[in-house]
Image 1 (spheres, protein in one colour):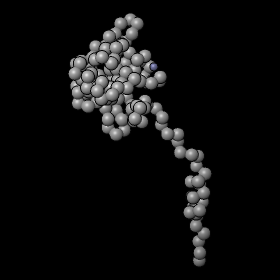
Image 2 (cartoon, helix red, strand yellow; image 1 turned 90 degrees about the vertical axis):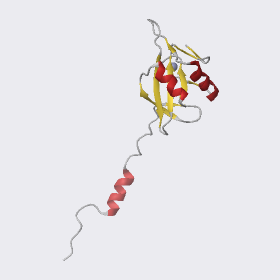
Image 3 (cartoon, protein in one colour; image 1 turned 45 degrees about the horizontal axis):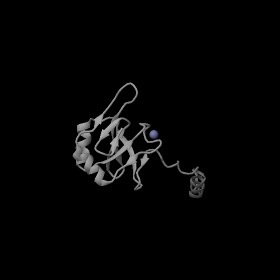
Image 4 (cartoon, helix red, strand yellow; image 1 turned 120 degrees about the vertical axis):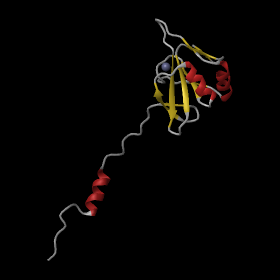
Length: 129
Ligand SMILES: [Zn+2]
């Protein structure tokens, strides 16, 4: 007495897998720094003391001049500029009717930290919003 297998055969399963649509499109959100690292926002707002502390401990710095969240790209800085900002002390975040400065914290998949100054922030010699 032989039984016909009921469920799909292995060949059926393979065929089905091969017919699946292509893998979902890779997530291209986030902002990419010049070295190819992809950054995602971790905290929408951090205070100035926290920001300078992070940078003094090796976090990178970028400036979102227009405050759009990275749509038109950030300004990136060399380690020399980052060290200068760490020495310059807490950034000045200005907010008024027309402009709103902000500081946010971003991370990379590799565990890197990035402080993003947005719009009206003054920090060291390099960021003069
Ligand atoms: Zn922009």
